[in-house]
Length: 117
Image (cartoon, rainbow, N blue to C red; front, side):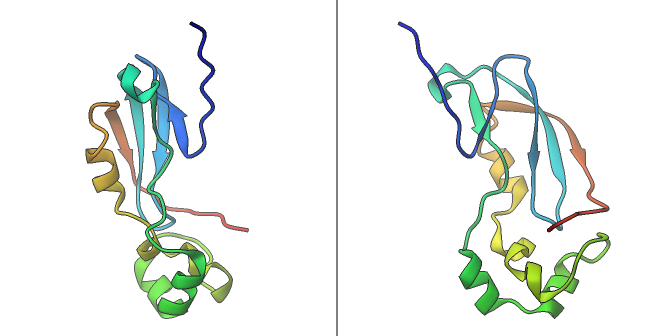
């Protein structure tokens, strides 16, 4: 049987395939190697994933919160990107831990620059 897999919100994670799983604009990213989990169609998440909507993030967070959460990262810190605040995303470490059966962590990258819009 032929199977065509399309991925939305996922990366290829076939056995030995390298990929990157980014965190939010204030957290690190991971270089991973796929484990070829057939039950997951050789896929893994493509990032931290939102835990709140853009509108909810705009209501909850301020530019001061954005400055605090992105300290040490060179990036925009204005109201136009408050919806991208790290607090609006799931913790990337937790996301990685929940897919240890899909990927092997090769390296963790520390973010120093983030370019948004």
